[in-house]
Length: 190
Image (cartoon, rainbow, N blue to C red; front, side):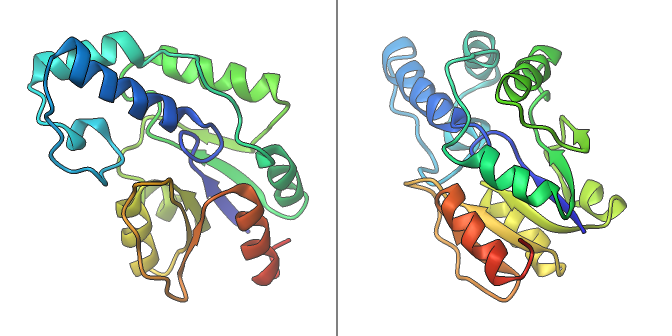
């Protein structure tokens, strides 16, 4: 079976860094409180920033390295690799190649390997379809809503403060890799 896993906010705790940095940037550097959508996972849609302000955030923080691998991610990924083909399907790299190099280095340092890497994809639907992905693990609620409605089993890796989704036969919520392990075990995928 083919399983796709997002990186930021799922394998890496980088989303916590990016969100904290965005708050500091908005409040202290821009001197604003321009949050439009508090539950939004992407800074591009969370804040009422103009193009110049967004570009300023990206130039300061897109290549940040102040993040680590989520606890137990390697353990569960290693278990999944024994039975499945694993894909990275990530928006990382949409701003610049440096983001991808950082991710690859962090994965190598943690001794985490995937079978295929698909970087720079905001819309993951076509990648999932083209690669016959049966399971998607992602922290973006819109990705999970869209793919689960198309019959792809999704694990919504929800951070605190993010939108809550109703669970369905094709959608489950996880808050950590222990939850992912339990869900995969319950579905006889581990």
